[in-house]
Image (cartoon, rainbow, N blue to C red; front, top):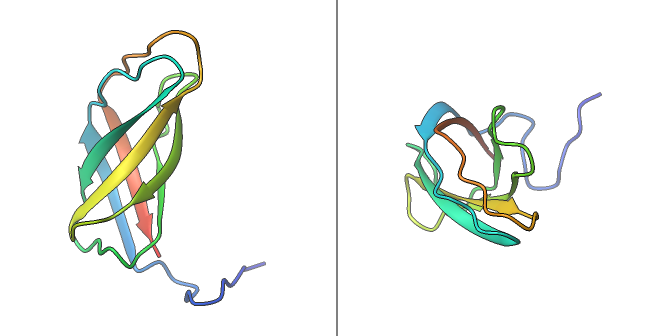
Length: 95
């Protein structure tokens, strides 16, 4: 069953990946940001970002674009210790 959201077509406007990036160390109970270069990304789009190999206890909690071609991804560490993940492959869907 396909789900249709008001204002969005059923087809993503942008699919990109893998984009390799090494996230900075994420402090305890903190959010860190990484910037991915995504050709075709624009500030009026909404983004879904995945990283299949992201370290345990890290999570992606949102993504947005303020400058065309760049997507900023928020990564959260809810634990009591910092986590320094290795280089990851990120995948981006733009709607």
